[in-house]
View 1 (cartoon, helix red, strand yellow):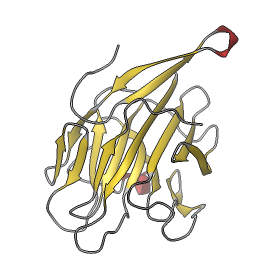
View 2 (view 1 turned 90 degrees about the vertical axis):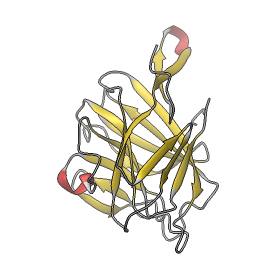
View 3 (view 1 turned 45 degrees about the vertical axis):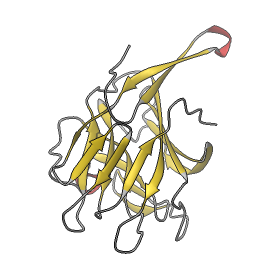
View 4 (view 1 turned 135 degrees about the horizontal axis):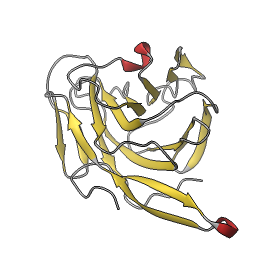
Length: 193
């Protein structure tokens, strides 16, 4: 069940009796702005200026609990900046644009400072400079039942996230890369704490 394609796989977690969990691939990166490239599990901003470009999954997350995790593979070519965004966005947005958190269409964590962007927030709950560094894993857990979005650093809960009632679906997994050279890579089989 789900897409088998190049890119980032997000997992759906179905809860059963006795809290047994069944996980299976739900979606992969399917769309990215023309200054970005999807190559297998790797998403890279390859060219252009320092402006946001959106990448999203094709599969809509409308029900259930969804998880995904990526490794921060590389920062910007010019200065190793990790000012990039990972989270969820409304479906069918223009991938040639970005800044959707400011328009009420995206909910993200910014990797360089761990700040929350979206739902009226800009860099809220910032964890300070270098909150994430190259090699760290950034995890995302969306609960469509209560509208919450939690983030993880190397498998451990990180920051406050967006509380219940913050996100109304349907949404897709999303990232906004800002600077050429920024790169994230899928972590397959990730288990978030």
